[in-house]
Image 1 (cartoon, one colour):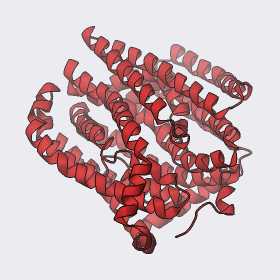
Image 2 (cartoon, helix red, strand yellow; image 1 turned 180 degrees about the horizontal axis):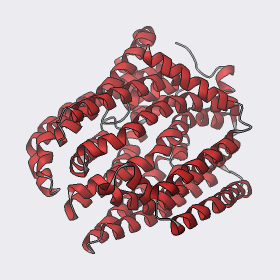
Image 3 (cartoon, helix red, strand yellow; image 1 turned 120 degrees about the vertical axis):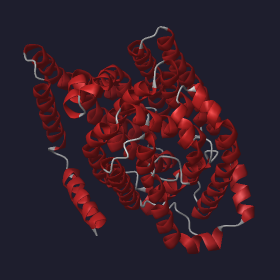
Length: 504
């Protein structure tokens, strides 16, 4: 049984090591997102708003179950000093999730038709039997959460990237084949999309088992599993209901939009969220996973404030410019890329960009709640997030306007995530002066570019012109940001190597 608190690991929260681990995740995520971005216009045109809306509803229902099917014990895998305790937590978490998946079978069987009727989506009833299967493989995410956390715990970020790419390619290819073959229905889209959700955890699970099976054989015992589950009971007691509320608050808009408006409206919302999630999936999710690992070590060594402050400023630098540019050109972008029937989704993007800025910066660092074991705070915060999100869409639905629903949703989200950002900065003991300076600098950098694109939209009628100019400006911005970044060459090299491994 080995102890992970080695001198090498104690120094791994340094800027170079943290950046390196983020780059390993970002490089793999970049390839995966490139595939998703390139194929999404074709998929959107092949299937249309209603099938995408049905798939979004299925994903939302699965996501709600997935938020509690591990009792959040996977978050504790990162915390023990002894890796043997982490191994017991991993096995215990997988056991809990497998049992939970089986328990959902009768629930879906008996309640499925009523749920579909309540959501004003009768076609959904045909596909709800897939929920237990998707749960067993970790939901409709990039893999089983416990497996991903274990890979991060053992600093195998390259494996996470490779499996993520493989799953994305598999899902994209399967969806395109189904659509091009003429199966342009909700069932065809669902069948193609969930393939990657099954392939990814299978690949990652096999790699973990192949590399760590001796550790599991030597350390995993039922008594140790039970001992660790009891020790970290706060995750089940507070984090599980907190995660459930957080997930429900995320998925509630799809349910309410379907009930008040139509599945097509859900499709518009789903595609707008998909585009807004690109920067989060590209950078934010990678920061989150690496942040959890390194912040745990930084907290032990008493340098948490410096580490959180640096991470916050980096997230602001990477996010403000592209997200604010989406607020200017969202409608034009969807018109050019996805076609006229998706313009509504572009308007949603423009409205939701305000909330997205706050979400992008605070969400990756919300792992600090788990590092500091402040589970009670996150429980209370998620109550507020749930109430505000549901109320926002509900009021918009009562008023009969999806635009008002999006406006209320965006403003309330900005306030809630803004408060989370303030809490993180205060608990970490960061310098408000440096944080404020970083935010102001990035707003000043964006202002002339955003203003120029806005004026361009006013003086010429062609949507593609403002889209091309905006993309050019975003590229120039990142070249400026990375011009002195030694790590840029590592990003490009990592992407090239990962593509080569996938092709092999």
